[in-house]
Length: 341
Image 1 (cartoon, rainbow, N blue to C red):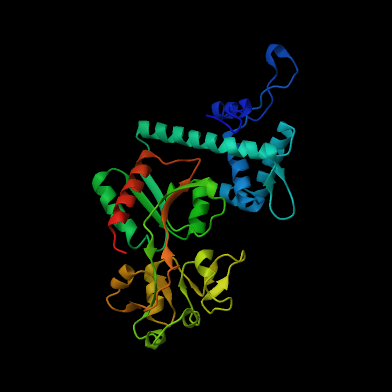
Image 2 (cartoon, one colour; image 1 turned 90 degrees about the vertical axis):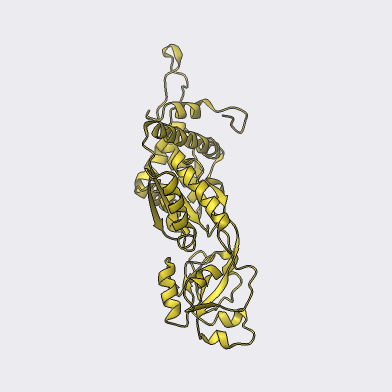
């Protein structure tokens, strides 16, 4: 494994080889008192990487499933052992120092290799017979059921567990190692280097309303007309939300100002469909989803080129995928290519 300077630093190589050791200096050869090697636990590497990814102790602690004071003490202890700070701590967002950036860069690769080793051992022992993944709103209706059926036919002995949710919920579960991967649309590009993904086909979306909705009577429906009605669905990514007026009745911006929080936030197409059918709310979907409503829903006759579904199979870069999870991802990609727009 090659680092930024052409070789792996000895301290980090020791971390890879000695993940169960405590962080401590070793005496120099011959019993001297000079500087020795420092062994870093893999769990502390995860903490450093998580803090660098989140830029915030509270978010990193939540992702690691530990308390914020415990994470802060652990980072401080490591900095004390190394004799140098790993993070700058300005008022807003924490940033790695040069040493911290080095450890984050090399640590990602070490964590990825450690996870790959764990997966290989589990495969060898026949333990990786479970696939746990998250599914986004639209993939959970069209792609995922078909992929599960096809995968079950190929590998009937593998247990599959799917959890529906938005990108941010699934991202937190990926951080904690509670799922192998996520199938759906990432709604932000924060810390994209922490993830790997395999793209799904892009699909044109449409504005979905109930049959007989007031918008259906308009001769030429515009975006301003649509924005006058409440939106039912998942939070909209910035690439879509930015096209709507700031005072649109669809919903409100989130705390970060990047996502549009719907008036009726839901992550189940069954729930969204029911809301739209029984009210004047609008939703974003696809022609295939509307076709499954039996005529109760319609797509408005308006083309919004930027209203596209951009999905992917996403996983944490340092963890990799087990052979069973990789096989499921392969099946999902194949099935996705056969689905209609």
